[in-house]
Length: 167
Image 1: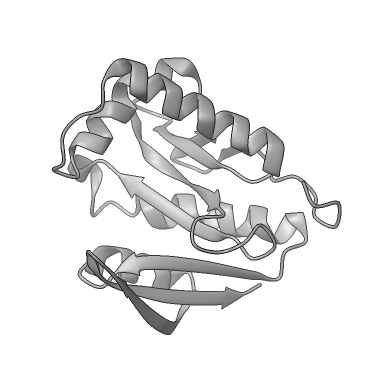
Image 2 (image 1 turned 30 degrees about the vertical axis):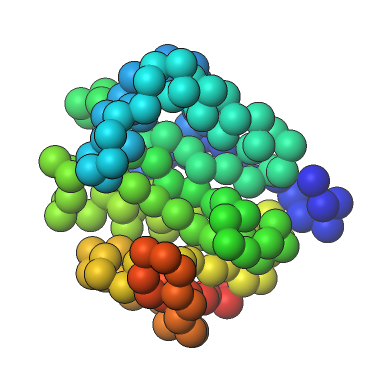
């Protein structure tokens, strides 16, 4: 981890949500979330490997995607956090993905708000987000978080909109 930044907090709560570091047992619901993308469901072995990798990367880098669980219901509904992604450790990306069944309840905004606060607490000064041009719901979340569109890039799947927020 870069010494100039403090590690991100890996356990957070809001009024409705708990965010925490991945556990191997998260592999089962993670598979279902990935399957909602419409490109198949990973095997349980692959899912376990992926959640272990996410946890290990967090411990190495000091930033993380965290699981999101509704406190009252106790169910896992997705993830939110900071990643290197298409950016850098110094100016990471915020990322989130929730099950479709919980869209429209403000959970992504609620989780992302505490993640932005966590980024500030690490000493970072800028966050990025990269979102596919068709993803209107993610743009609404970013707007609430005061991200501003910066530029676009393209790959084999189409336009990627880069948004930025100074902290």
